Length: 185
Image (cartoon, rainbow, N blue to C red; front, side, top):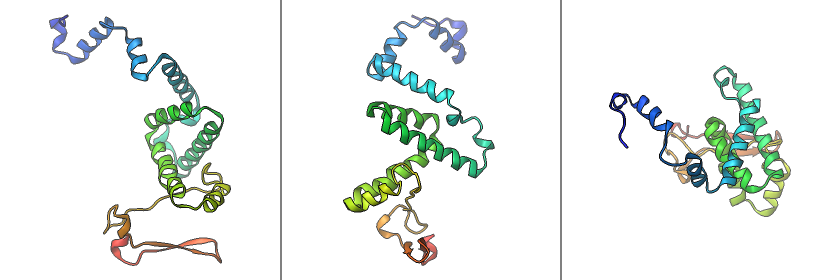
């Protein structure tokens, strides 16, 4: 099939014309891309839920203050934690993959907490330490929000070369951050 010449100079028009009469069943292609019809329907249900939920609105991001952005991010984390504990794993993973596209800014914040901070706890803590931090709310971000610092001016992401230290001051229950040189900033 050849495109009509009058539209061949306009990519927008030629694409619109092709979409009017595809040579294959588009819905079947969608099922194939997603793996099966059931996954496509679940994906569409999740997208509709996100679209209808004001918490996942992104159109007002430029108008939010830093405090409002943080509060919304924390509300999203709490929502995801609730869903992760009440819904099947495959649905939770699919929801997270959709959210990464819908709201990449949130996904970055979420990923730093769970992928870096919580991942470091899981990989490096003893069972007792992990239990302690879980009880403090490390997984659900209820009472504790994690971070992960691994970049310094003089070291990039060479974690082994980092100079900055964080030492717990037990009298104040706060960490004292010490960056000994300019390259440690």
